[in-house]
Length: 114
Length: 112
Image 1: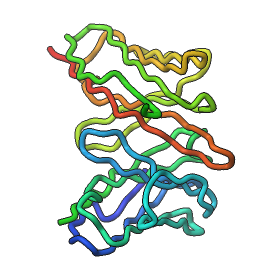
Image 2 (image 1 turned 60 degrees about the horizontal axis):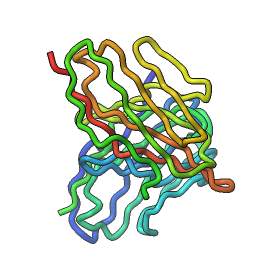
Image 3 (image 1 turned 90 degrees about the vertical axis):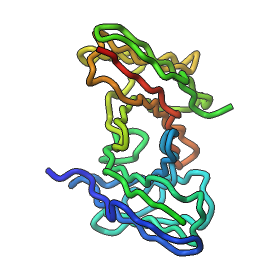
Image 4 (image 1 turned 90 degrees about the horizontal axis):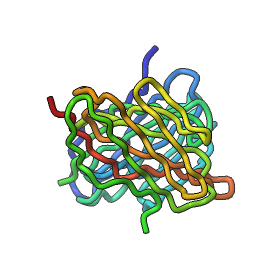
């Protein structure tokens, strides 16, 4: 069975641009969560979606938004990119609500903002 | 105070050693607890869930103390392949929202 997939794997953008990251969960998993990980730190929770509804939100500005599609795949959008948005963006899927069930992570998208 | 704190590390231990990692959390309403490991420049991988009664998986033992808001991970007979960063994860539920919080991680290097 395929694991969590993310695209693209690497991305370079300039300040002020917009970016869309994509994630496909494990088949049968209905919850997708997004995390930002800066080098040397643990992943920071951005969003959680379950059955296409937002079920959790971390302390990120409104420039960050996400959505989940009927097939449970998800997009993370970041507007007006800042240098500080450079990070590894991780997507995780789980059977149900993320906090109550184990999460399985994709390989991440490494975003560099110049 | 950070919501989830871990031993700062790094831990450098010889093969065969026993090593323990500690994690504390601030939200007493937290409901679910996990340990993940993350290899360099890779995604986190679930190591084990942590149950109130404590649980063991081979060389790994996890303990939860709700009264002290404390989680631990014990690794016995360390292997070179155990070298990684160990992340403590806590689900802090707020009304109908879940907020999953990762600790900063503790780095382990097992030395031959």
